Image (cartoon, rainbow, N blue to C red; front, side, top):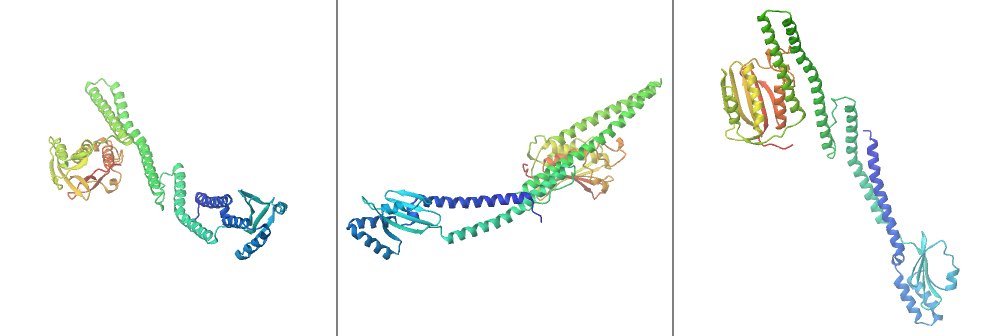
Length: 430
């Protein structure tokens, strides 16, 4: 797989941070050594003790004592006069002074001068090797950094891949390729981002498709009654027959009512599609909701059968909107059925269902996939006698989305259609 620039940028940034951090640790350690005489040799106490010792002996014995100590301790010790020390060139060395002790050091060696109290004599130790950090510790640090680099590589690789794929998808989507979907995330860190993007893209695509469909459908829906009204007005102006005039006025009145109904349904659908209203979820009895809706249709010559398979179990729902969705199902069953309507209340795992089944002609298989779309009707001629404007089921679909459920249709055993409302028994806030 080709690694993107974002991967290398992030990877080298992290590795550079660790390298700089390691270098700074070395600098701090070196600085600490420079500020602490004990860190250079560890012999400060020894030099002080040796100085005190020789002070108790005659000065002509000092050279012999120092030589004996150098031989015994295997250290480069010697005794020099202050004048001899001054003649030594130390201009290339850094100097640290503490009381009678002076340290001269460079990158490789260190030399310590200790002046004996109240004399011009100096005990010199050195030149000695500059102390360094133990090699084993340095090796362990290198191994740890190399291991960290490998871990970071395999951790950042899927993260970089997901970000690059998401960037490419966003660019394609911005170029009006609304069907593109970001690939499934390999990193758990980018998974919520990819999911959110795909959800947003799906929402935008749906809105754009709805807008296109709305524009086409509205033009058709408005044109038909307007054309009829225009024709009726022309005919009304051309006749003096009172009967025909009344006929044309009645036709114009029906067209106006149809336009008002269309505009009203369009406004309702637009409000549902653009903004989610505040839903009030309470524990409701589905039997009561169903019986209430059935009672509203007692004036029709329909045979209603209500079957409750959930018992007294209550579900969380917005009573107003569930009633509205159920009312649409029942009115469609009355319109397209043949007098028998079965309503079943049941439970499927953690979801409740209301099924409204009629004994009509059913729904064509090709139409089932679009029946819940706005302005979708089974009769492509859009004859008003075959139904409404195709917005009722689209509103039902939107209501079920708000409840975290779904609206669907299947064939019934009676040969008609079975429309289903399904949503979780316990509401999950989104």
